[in-house]
Length: 239
Image (tube, rainbow, N blue to C red; front, side, top):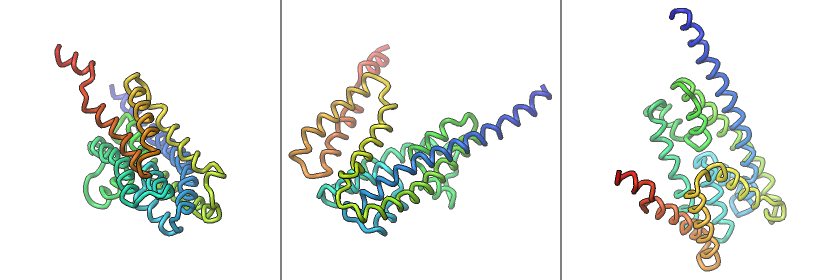
């Protein structure tokens, strides 16, 4: 029994080092998408400082793309804010799940709230111990924040000289990034059906609704699907 203790203790630092390396890789790969955000932001009418403050404070790629997409499409500030908030709600759910292993108060708690995003939550979830989960969260969160803002600055500087982001494919790059994040999550027929229905609603409403509102209309499909009792849950309740 005593001989097994040193090896088990040594395994924890090994996992922590590995998950920190993973966090760095995730941060670099995710940060590259910041180039598209920065270019789209300044090309859509935001100045350099507005684009960078939005990136540093909001720090949620999907919400930032939604905001500048609505503004760039001629939508209202209210529509842009609503679309951004709707996409950012998921981070609150991540925060609840991470509260078991991460600090809740003080400056660390404030930093945790700022760094709670898809990538930090996913990297943390891959840890098999509380120590590894914490290391994964901070590694991914900090590196994504650093690289995202650095590449956003580079993209914003480029975007000032690009009159039409579509000519460079930057608008398509944002959509491709969303699809790359979405595709691995479509693991069941039910989620695929919801995604197809939401896309259909977005296509129908885009010609008739102001910019930004089709996003909200498509999101309502997922809300309704979540409230609708599925057959699997109904059968489980009957049993």
